[in-house]
Length: 184
Ligand SMILES: [Cu+2]
Image (cartoon, rainbow, N blue to C red; front, side, top):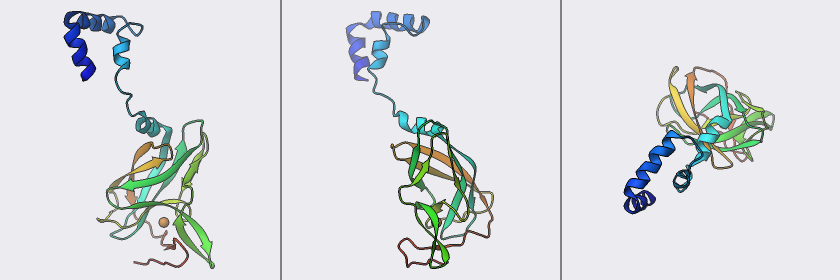
């Protein structure tokens, strides 16, 4: 805004002519200096959006309380990527893993997040790592599409949509530090 105003007031006609010439003759032109003055676009979120894809995302249908989303996360880059968080309009979210404790499977927050190897995959499935919806604010019915966003360690964000399916498993206890069971 300010650079445009300044240029327009100093060289009203010439600036316009240069801009038109630049539009007609491709990339190597003096007018690119003006373009370079623009603040850099927040590239991280759009770059992140193509860096990670998710195959067959789905969320377990539930009327209330907790539920979880699954799918296969795919890292399309040649660098490892770490997912450190997730968010959704319908619930607070956590990254969870399953582990054995006192002879039964419990789930707990995944320390360090989900690490996707370079060009690698990370499976989220019932009985394994999953995206936990901690407390639904509205029922998620079979066929609903639920939007959520993954947050990367580098600050990028990746939006996804999961379709809701009925599923009778994944009723494991939640024990973030050993003792707490949460049953609906
Ligand atoms: Cu969980």
